[in-house]
Length: 251
Image 1 (cartoon, rainbow, N blue to C red):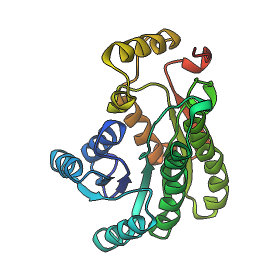
Image 2 (image 1 turned 120 degrees about the vertical axis):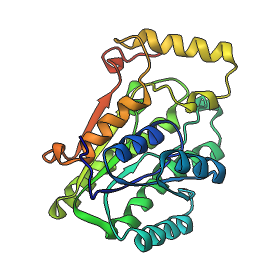
Image 3 (image 1 turned 30 degrees about the horizontal axis):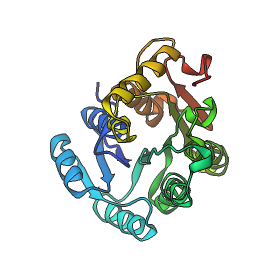
Image 4 (image 1 turned 90 degrees about the vertical axis):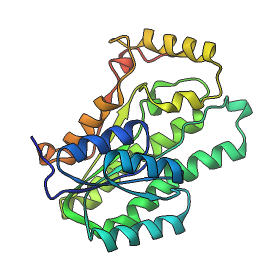
């Protein structure tokens, strides 16, 4: 059943992985869907495949965010939901972590997300839904993820404040915290195929359901939180990790 008729949704980082799966699902449910990404070719390909509107936008640039907001306002007027999914995942041991590593993750995952929402807020309809894509890494204590974990924990903390501040407009604010998901992000960790397979096996053994999530499973949760079916849910972090956080020590 189409549940998003006359619903306009922005999904940042919608050209691959969780964002792509969510855009596909929202489109199938009748929504007007907007996706963003930094890569021109990837956005063009994804928007064509999905039949949605795509904008090239760098979340780390406030000027790019301003341009994005102006484009959305001009073409669509307002939004009904925002899925702040775009982010980067890079991992370094604490003792080797560089200033560049720290700044990159914080600029994109925290500063960029903060100002994207702040600048979009004037065109988000009352009664709208804001969804942050965070991570169980904020709490499970995985080695080599100090900065990434801190960036996601910052968003979870911020979401609770925003849920309070935006409640008078009946705007709901929630977080999705996935465990490991089969997306291209794991191909970007700098591991060779043997190391990647070993890493995946280790994580799978820690997950009660013994597998990674599919991006489509995260999309279903995003769909629920964007819809009126979750009308009494706000200020919440929903963990979707197959039971990983029941057995959280990863080493």
